[in-house]
Image (cartoon, rainbow, N blue to C red; front, side, top):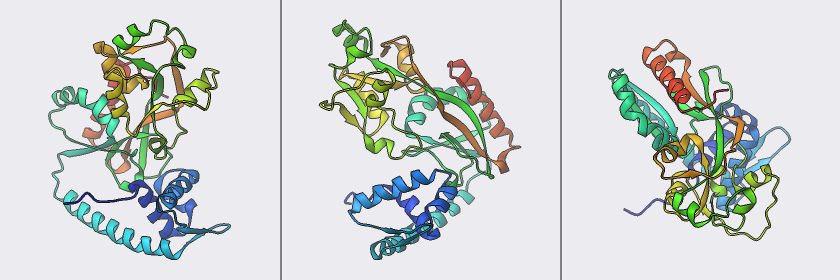
Length: 310
C-alpha cells in the first residue's frame, strides 16, 4: 500500500473548526488555543496547498471555492473517525484510564517510570496515548499532559513544572572541545536545532538556538548551518551520537544526564516560568480514585526529579 500523502493533520482539525463556525475566534475557543495560533495553523495549510482557503472579513471568515471543497472532505473524514472512535471507546473496560501526551514526553519522561507506576498502582490499566501535538480539549480526553493550557469549563488543570532549558552534549564531544567555557564558545560548533515545523504546532514562541543566544545577549550572524530536526527525539539521538550540541529540556534529558550519557555544559539554565506543563483531566473524572492517584503520583515524580511547579 502506498504511503498516504497528507497535509499537516493538526492544521486540518483547526481548519474544520474555523470553517464550521466561520470564525477564527470561535475556533480558538473550541480548541482551547489563541486566535493567533488558529491563524498560524490556517496559514500553514494555505502555504501547503499554495491556495487561499478563507476570505478574511472584519469579524468573520468565509470559504473560498477551494476551501469549501476541502471542508466537505475533512468534515466527512473527521465524522467517520469520531463515530468509530466513540464505538471503540464504548467497548473499553471501565478499568482503563487513558493519558494523552506528546511523543517526546511519553518516550523520554513517562516510559522510564512506567514500570514503577504499574507497581505502585496495579489496579490502574493505563493507556498511554501519544502524538506530535499537545492534547487539547476538543479531543475529549480523560487525562492528559498538556504543554500550556487555557481554562476550559469541562477540564481541571494542575500545574506540574515549568521548562528548564540548557545546552547538552556527550562527554566525548565535550572532551574534544575543551575551549567550551561560555555561550560564546558554542558559536563555531555544530549545533542541533528543532526546525520551524516543530514550533508551528506549539502555543509558545520557538525556543531554538536563535532564541537561546538572544537570552544570553548574543546575536548570531545570518550565515549559519544548524542541523535541523522535526522531532525532539530525533535531535536527542543525534546528540547521543556525538554530532553536536543540542538544547536540552531538563525533564526530557535528565535520564541521560543521570546515566552519564550526556553532560550539561554550563551551570546556569534558562528557567521559562511562563512555559508550564499541566496535568489536565475532565471534570467528570474529578472523584475518580484512579485519576487522583495518577495526579498525586505525577506531582510526586516531578518533586523527586527537582522540577518546579507554578
